[in-house]
Length: 390
Image 1 (cartoon, rainbow, N blue to C red):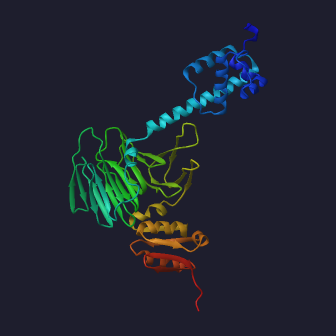
Image 2 (cartoon, rainbow, N blue to C red):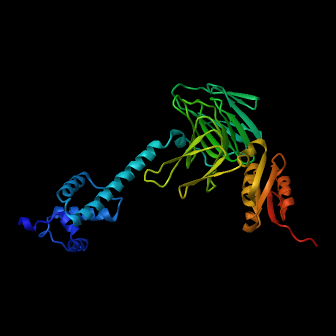
Image 3 (cartoon, rainbow, N blue to C red):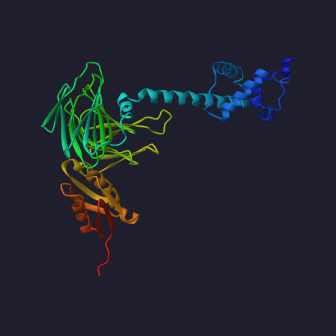
């Protein structure tokens, strides 16, 4: 074959007519060498599908072609597209690699646990599949500095073996209708709300303090500049040094809420960038709302007591929708509450609810200020528009 008739893969892609013939399979090997045809076809497929990987030989040959024809304008455009496709493949690979590497051991352990509470009692799960059942509605779990002794409601002491260098986890699962307070080995205190799960090391290692939460908890973190405290959930990670904040990350909620009472925290979440990790700091008095679906985070100023008062046995509510209030009460009391219509669920309530009362008493208090009535049939509670008398 004469040199002036020789066609390379980039010549085919740069020529609109030849590209069309390539797509239609109309180019003969007598005109173009078979290896160039194959290479051109592979490049074309890569451009059509950004996820198609190049093998080593193709990358090497493509690099030489780019160098030899960089000054040709039309071929330049093709090369830019090829380079972009290769760059996307590389970035996707790097992103996946870092996401896998950054998935903490505690999150992996938490994924092996039951998704929902398996008991009506609060459960303390120890290594070796040992489970302690706690009957109290409001319980208290306190660890010694070494994590070897656990006091439960000052009535029972549990002992466990802590092996040096062995990262063993304890888990507390709180069903709906119950709550517990946990004092960890570093003296940090956590109020765990109804329907929540907390995973934490028996004793923290020398690098950092890390726990996993599903549900809602208020954290009062013991300051330790050398060992930052990390709270990991399915969609958000919080880094703190010493502070008080509330994290609500229930699996059935569409938004993950973080409220900072005092101190400073850094939120780490999956964003929209290629590498998928954003960081944002919070200041006291702020609420951060993270949407895992849109990967967006918005902050606004709030009265933090509206979000943290539940640990003290009451709800402080300011223009909250009836639907959101009922969801909290259903979890808190472990009762089924239905609202007659969406319009009714969207109506708002402002007031102070004493959670030491029964669910019916709390709902009746709401009914006094709204045009609603509470109907109970067995274990089912229904909220409906007040019926006209007579």
